[in-house]
Length: 120
Image 1 (cartoon, rainbow, N blue to C red):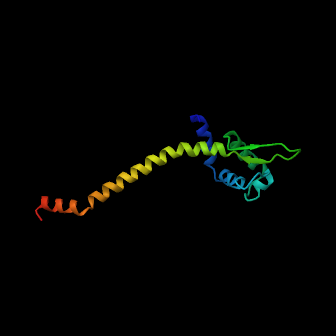
Image 2: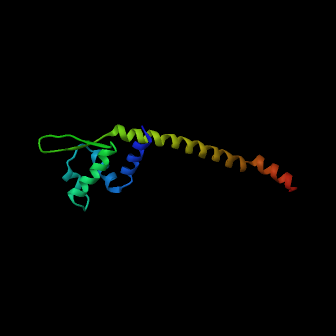
Image 3: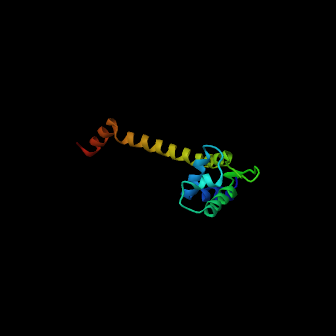
């Protein structure tokens, strides 16, 4: 996954309407009218959102006669999730180290040692 494709994916995901469209597509294919139903916007506006999602590779459309259903492209979403997973591991490890350090600071042995140094 290139940096540029990640930029397109995260740009597409930055809009709540597009995230709503993706959520709807997790239930299966849908046409533009069905995808537009929960939103108070025109069909051309929804179509623009679909183009952004399609350009990012998050959805694809097929053609069945005059109907062009949209489908979720889960592989692209997985690629973005994998990229974010690297940072999740970093933060989890950082939080684990912080937790260990805080436990050391509040341990009874540490308090006794500190009290002796301060002459208590």
